[in-house]
Length: 280
Ligand SMILES: O=C(O)CCC(=O)C(=O)O
Image 1 (cartoon, protein in one colour):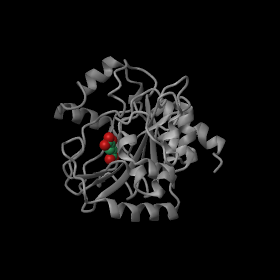
Image 2 (cartoon, rainbow, N blue to C red; image 1 turned 135 degrees about the vertical axis):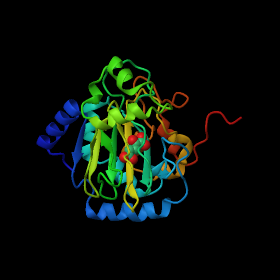
Image 3 (cartoon, rainbow, N blue to C red; image 1 turned 30 degrees about the horizontal axis):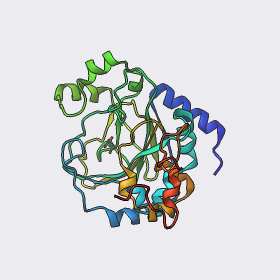
Image 4 (cartoon, helix red, strand yellow; image 1 turned 120 degrees about the horizontal axis):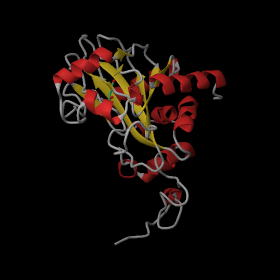
């Protein structure tokens, strides 16, 4: 699919200025229906373990490996065009997960998605995130909440406003941040794309229905990925994926030789009958 240049320029402008952009109708009705049916088979196995994952929230990690439809979405041309703008060539998929927030869930702590790269702010993003609404996002059901322009905050402002980050929850701080936040209200099948440096959170679900979404995140080719796709998805499965998805999963070289496999290209590992160089 060719990407509309005017749309792309406007989306880049929004990400640069407020840290996020929405893509209305991101999924076609056919893909949304396939996503719903694929997720119905996957949900129900993994409950969040803490306040960050959400104790009334289900997560399905490594979504990209679980159904062909997620591979189709992972390499969406519009998202690839945005990654090409904000990340270096050979960028990687760093996370791919479904997030289903059940009724009664409290708000997630505010966070940024690339805070674990210890580089001083303000700085360019190390990762770019997408969250796709499978159910419509509303204020009541836990639609993602973002703090516009917080991707530009420097270290001092971030520390002052945000405290020390993961792990510590200061309710006063969260309330102050909540005053600055806006809820991304969007229809099922729409998507929000935002800088890894933007403060955001999953909202509280005060409705009587779950709010389901999925998130694909992409990172610089020199950064460690959150998910270890090499261990999570068997090579036989990766072999059936498109060359682009294989590259996003790390079967690629970032020059001169990051990602090499004992001096070979890592795609060699996908050849039938491949024997790893170290057998014992
Ligand atoms: O579910 C959401 O709306 C946001 C989730 C999120 O930011 C995360 O889990 O890192």
